[in-house]
Amino acid sequence: MPRYGCGGAGVPAVVVGRGSDVCRVDGIVTRELTKHALSHASFVITVSDEIRRRTIQMGARPSHTKTVRNGCDLSVFYPMPTEGPRAGFGIPKDSELILFVGRLVALKGVRSFWRRSKYWRRSANACSWS
Image (cartoon, rainbow, N blue to C red; front, top):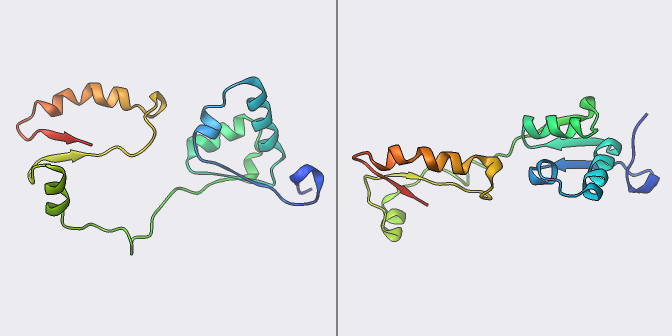
């Protein structure tokens, strides 16, 4: 039997779990509303297997969940020469660059990564941080 959202109006509801909406649910009311949405969704899509596992723990039906990883259009995003952009930011041409894109939260392990990076920062070819 299919499940429907929108208060029983007969409209299928697809829920997408992207990260903090499932991993960091603050407060009992928000948690219960999230569980309700997941358990009553027609289908749940997540961006990682870990988030899928969490949605199932919160009530999503395993047979109605799927992981669809984020991606990009390689005709738009592709490697380009780095000399110009590096020079614009004052980054030496021969240095290694580590770039983090995302929300700086403990869950992503950035603090642990930063502590271990002291070994790289001491190397002859020191890293630049952005």
